[in-house]
Length: 100
Image (cartoon, rainbow, N blue to C red; front, side, top):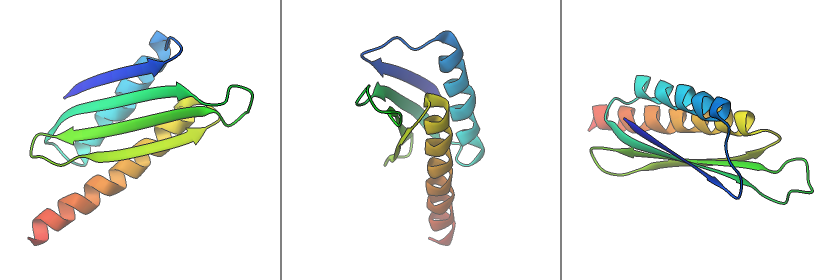
């Protein structure tokens, strides 16, 4: 699984990038045909407190895609929330495949 991290208008630290990679790797437990994961980090409205946006797109090798985007106080919190949302999407998708 390839993980691409893009930070808009700032430089992400090594610590943040390794945190993201660790969290995103957990998605393979829910669906094992993930080819690529794209993570976009962005600071929206720098003057407000709830301004860290994380968008994650999961591209499986079988086609289709899954997407989650959250805005929180920290990037870590936004990544956590996005990963939880993607886990639910992947579980639902897998259950639909089993029924079909």
